[in-house]
Amino acid sequence: MIKLSKAKPADIKAMQTLVAPQVEAGIILPRSDDEVAQNIRSYILAKSGEQIIGFGALHIIAPDLAEIRSLIVAPSEQKSGIGAKIVSELIAEARELGLTRVIALTYAQGFFEKLGFKLIEKSQIPSQKIWSDCVKCKHFPICDEKALMLWL
Image 1 (tube, one colour):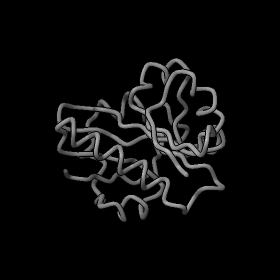
Image 2: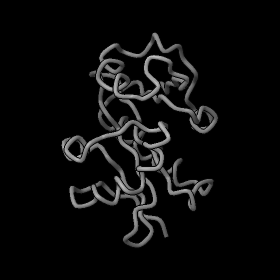
Image 3: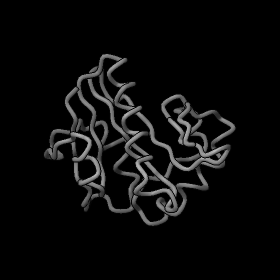
């Protein structure tokens, strides 16, 4: 049975191990242990027993806007609905916080569209997102990720 829970600092090592291949491939941005620790309250974990099999974060960008980022599911668990459960939990949290929009920058456009996100122009993304995160990407400034938004 899959259980969703908030991440704790003790989970960081296992989280970094799970995400490492996607970081190396340039699909997910690298985040240091310190950066993950500073934002640990934004992460939701999916666990099978004690093993972390997926996670994602809700990162607040502005008073009405958050981003779903660092979404990962173990290769052996993909296509099982775990990613959708994590995103649904993050969206519920965004609603609880009174946010009105959630964005995702992703190579998995179809996945997010199935969850109600709509393709948008990257120009609709606040510049602070671009300059705080995107500059860390190995693909910057030639970005082929898609920007999607969900209006709550």
